[in-house]
Image (cartoon, rainbow over all chains, first blue to last red; front, top):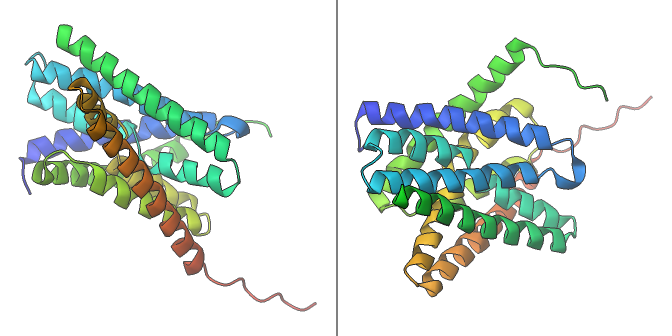
Length: 126
Length: 132
């Protein structure tokens, strides 16, 4: 295993918080039947912004490597999720809702790219 | 249905299950990124297949918290994927950005579908109806 035990601790701690917050946000949107997958959309876009910011701050040496592990790899990495996004797209496709799947995919990727560029840009010029 | 506030015990159990899955998921993602140089296609496709399989199995809330929300959710990452694509776009490499987005999305969806159909097949047959 590469990396030290304290680095692993930072990643693990961030991951618990990120995954727990994701559960809370997704559960909040779950009862809203026509738009329950927007909870996943929200955590993913927020995490794109946050990860962009943390990576840029780390590259400009404003944030330490420890912060990058805790917040970047651990927290924002676990707050965002690709697997739920893929399964939610699959669910829409299986239900014959190709248009909803398309809208969800395009909106998620578009907003994700924009949010990561904003976060990264903000961190670079901070 | 009236919304009931979950008890502290249930909240703690939820946190424990999700955390117990999230830690190995994130550590595995981190280790693979160190060895494979920051590419997340492998973890994302594998996680999508596993979550698809879980979705095909009969519902089990605690297994879903541990393996689905915790492990698969933290193993896979949407933000690193977008950051990598954004960096390609930033350096004017549209082909690399579109390739990364299309490949991950296509393979991820395919893996989720494959996992799902496998999960459906693993589902134990319905118990025989008891005669009155």
